[in-house]
Length: 194
Image (cartoon, rainbow, N blue to C red):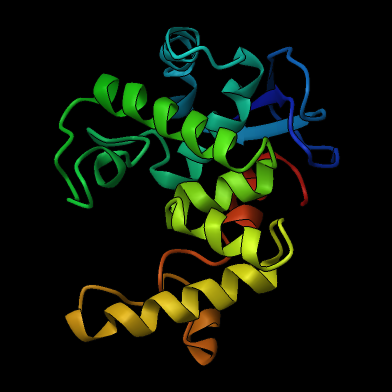
């Protein structure tokens, strides 16, 4: 059974059964997140590095939901921060604390570049900062359609490498196999319905 965390996020509330841990914060809505005990154990480190990097700790619950989506709190890189920290290299981080430090820093960076649009921030955490530039040229905010279009374009650029495949079978017909075009809704399921 997972642990539920009261979050501040732009997601609607839904009723769930389970252990409830409340985290208060402001600025991005109210809801609950279903996170594993493995993710829950990193709450103090997320708070520590949010404070270190000048990020309001009200974002800790959404970062917990993000971590749940990335790794379930397992492994040496629970925030999957290697690519943003090591210029695209996967697996360079071998310490959960370093992963959290660099993951919080990356989250803050994309949040600021996304002008505090949480959905744009989350999708950019997955795709990289280039998605923010793309979104700004196409309406200025996140939409699921833009995420799919960006994934299609980027996949065409990298599919020849053989390093990319669709993480979601439903994206195969779209050729949207770069990153996770449904990342915002996936993180949202950890928190609320998006």
